[in-house]
Length: 389
Ligand SMILES: *Cc1c(COP(=O)(O)O)cnc(C)c1O
Image (cartoon, rainbow, N blue to C red):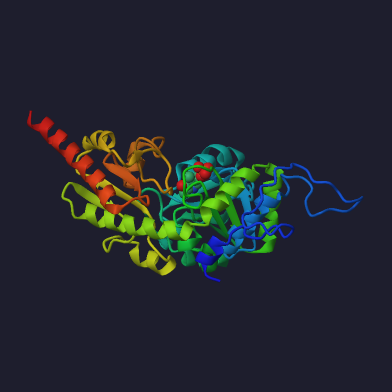
C-alpha cells in the first residue's frame, strides 16, 4: 500500500466492536482484569492505551519499522532514546543540531558521563575523525535547522553498522512521507510530531520508531519506566492531523521551492538555504534519499538592520517559533532558537545576524510572496533612508 493510503486510513476500524472510522479516545487510566492471571491486553494506561496504540502502530507502519512509541513531546522522545546510553559512552552528533537536543546532551547527559562530539555529519571524513573506542551512536538531522545541511543517511548507517554503533535520525523536517531512514539502514527514527506530522500548531508530541523488535522492546521499557507518554486526547489529535500529511507536504514543498527561487533572484538577499536549489551542496544526496526537499527555507538579508523591520512589517506570515504547520511562520534563529550558542560558533555554522528562517505554510503562494516582498522592500527603504540621513 502506498503511503498516501496508509496516512488517510490511520485509526480507521481499529475498534472491531463498533467499526468506528475514527479511532476512539479511551480516557480510562486502568482496565478491569477478567480474572486472576488474565488480561484484556490492557491494564494501566502508561503501559498501554488503546488510542495511543493505534497511533504507535500507524507510525511504525509509516516508517517501515517494527515498533512505534508515542511521547508527550519531541524532547521526551529524544530523552527516551538517549537513555539507551550509559556513563562512558560517546555520541557523534550533527553540529547544526536542534537547540533542545543540544541542551539535553550538554546539560543533562554530560554530567551523567555521556559525551558527544559535534561534527558536520554530511562529511564522512569528519565523522571518522571523531570516532573513539567509546562511540556508540551517530545522531543526525538531515536537513539541519536552520542551515539545511544534508547528511548521507545510508553512508552513516554503513559506517555505524561496521562498528556496532546505532544510527539515530531525527526525521522531524522530512516526515516519513519524504524520507524513511530505516529503509536506508538507520536503527531508530525520532520525530517532534508537534511539527509536520501534527501539522496544525495545536498538539505537542513526539514519536520514536525502532527498526527491529529487540530494540523496540528496549525503547518500550524506557518509555514505560520514564513515563512521558502521550495522552489519549493528544494521540487522537495527532492521528487526525497525520491523515492529511501527504496533501499538506505536497503544498509545503511547492510553496517552499517557489519562495526559494523568488528569494534567490533578489539582490537584497545574499544567501538562500533550500536543498532543492541547484546551488545547494547537499542537493544530490537529498534527492537520492528523499522524495522531496521539504518546506523549510532560510535566507540571509543583505543588512542585519533590516531584520526588525521585516519582522514588524509582516502581515500574513507570523513571527513565531516552531514549524511544520499549515500557517507560515518566520523565526530569527540568532535571537531565538540559537541564542544560547556563542556568537563565533553560531557564525561558523552560518547562523548570522542576517539569517531568517521561514516555515512555509500551505497558503496561496501569491499572498505569501506579496507579504514577504512588502516586508523586505519596506525594511530596505527604512535602512537605506536611515543611511542617507
Ligand atoms: C521541535 C523539535 C524537537 C523538539 O520537539 P518538541 O515537540 O518541541 O519537544 C526536536 N527536534 C527537532 C528537529 C525539532 O524541530
